[in-house]
View 1 (cartoon, helix red, strand yellow):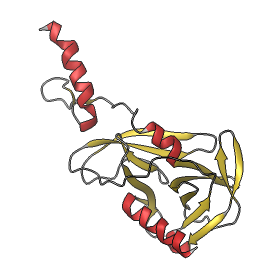
View 2 (view 1 turned 135 degrees about the vertical axis):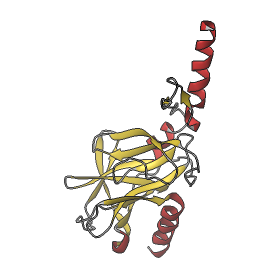
View 3 (view 1 turned 180 degrees about the horizontal axis):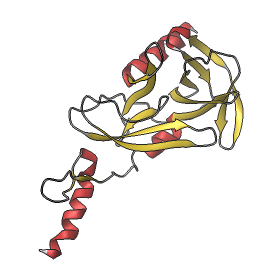
Length: 200
């Protein structure tokens, strides 16, 4: 029986991305094993853009080869002075269009050829998701478990992906006091970006 343990552990690791884990004993919750991020990391590096205005760090999502969409935190008005990270330096990012009602800004960024975003919905079963948030000099990348019908425990502003690279959407703050975090779906984000670009 002991000889079977490595095989069982290996199988549990492979299945971790679909919400299975290693049983910890009768009556205990299974321990979930975080999946490999090999499929999603290249997409994060190309599609999630670090942007700043003054001392405020913003997370941009590349919606076109040369354009990124930003969600502004409550209390941060649109401005003409954005900068985008280019490796270890910062370059000016001109404004293409704004949507003050949704606190969104479309900015011009250095062009890069990356895979098109594939919007997906969260599954009706538990799954791991990956969030990326700009911290200025780097991206804060977190893997969290998402239960059906619940909002992933990720900070506002995060771009959210499945572990196989599907674009779930953006974490935004809602409510009169800006205290409720929700996911703005990837399909809605891309539709709004296309509408903003069309009006520019």
